[in-house]
Image 1 (tube, rainbow, N blue to C red):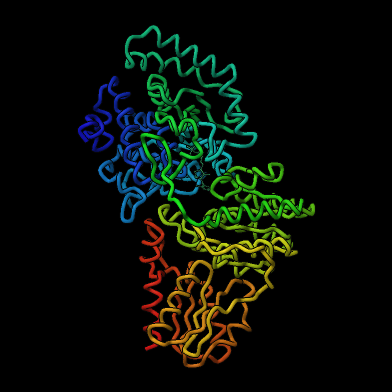
Image 2: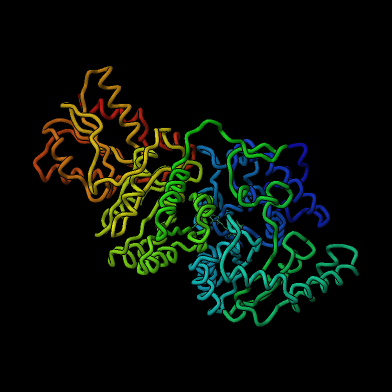
Length: 621
Ligand SMILES: Cc1ncc(C[n+]2csc(CCOP(=O)(O)OP(=O)(O)O)c2C)c(N)n1
């Protein structure tokens, strides 16, 4: 810590306030260096944090967290905020098992008034706090910081609409770096670009420069600018029309602009939107040049600026999905693909390289993505909506109302289903099987390996109705790929047969269950039947019933919430048909998983190979 003389002295926001104004750029430089070095061996969200360092310092200098509420949208850009709010020493543990959370988290710090992880929530939450403050007759400040990417989400507009129609004092800071994870999309993004490039910004910049040229110190500048900033409130913007005072755009890396403007905003009443312009990844050349890669990544080499790749791994489920879809689209021009601001993560950027005209990034707008797919299906196209399991939660009603009730042939491809690892509770793909299996008209599948994923994609595309495939984060098992073929709907696959009991395993838990069943056979001479369920809906009831043995163990293993999960439906099926015997329902327990590696979290949840083995041995005693 010796190389960080200023940063190491910051134990909380009060220490930021004690620094001299001229020390602030030095603190920013130390924070950048620290963040880049700390994340190199462990990975994490780098680019967004690097882009808000000056803003974070300015906020903690001028506002009084935790009394004043600072709410970061998504929370992936809150690493610098963590560094200034008493969590500096624990930064090397971020996203690690038992370490700091990857996002903001109420339980972690009083400086995180609202937990996040999913985008577009900050304005609504902040407006709730501002309203609550006024009901309680308090006078604290409430500040939401939202990126231009998150501004593509409907909920952000719902918040703006509601807050803008009120008189409650609220500061929304729009952090505009023109990037979502990938380049931002849509007309709002184009509008913001016009605001920045337009005359207004130029005038503001020139005027600001003139004021600054004449004053010697930042402090002096701050005083003068306070007056000047009032003139920066620009009428006629969309935000003004929505009831906000619009201030900006200003340079979000320049303390001489940020501090006086923020100070001024503090004294404005009602809803205010401050538009700041920043550069994602600022201060680390590779991240500035390729902000998409450096949004969030694994370990990297600081010197070369290269992400560290593990060599010789089998392809990921994501890659197999994208390549198979692109192959299918070569022969079927009705196939179109949709992503909600995750072209890289879902693999659709691979698909888009081959079929650029048939891939749509709709912004962080999962609800819209699903209804949009519904419209495409009405016109005879075959939409494939690729959304992570956790984010598709946003579009639950659209899946029911817009797709399933109408029986439209839309395919949902849900990556990161089950345990996600380092991104923790907010990103855990725990619930999709539970919430999809109760919807009529939908077919839901989970592959045991990447070859089966390809089969399922073919199956889904052929279906004349809604379907969903859920697959886990990470690499496949390295199984040999074959030419994908359609599966018979609702058929399970019996992998092992035996008289000593039945194990039904689902998707990402099949491989471990198979190893356990094989090992029990070899070491203990126990012969169990193992079914790879493949179809979560419709259930292959005939196959399950045919292999149930009265009085013998029955185990269900699934990487999804046990409450309301497949285990419960199979138990109901078995009991209804007169089965009795020892039963184990192995699913994700009724808690939110913490972050760690996938293996650590599976272990925590008693869902790994060892846990399956222990439980089976118990059952068979
Ligand atoms: C509902 C939801 N969908 C997708 C994501 C994945 N995601 C995390 S950050 C991000 C981009 C956010 O862009 P922006 O708000 O501009 O912030 P920046 O990273 O540019 O600072 C996305 C799409 C998410 N967190 N939540």
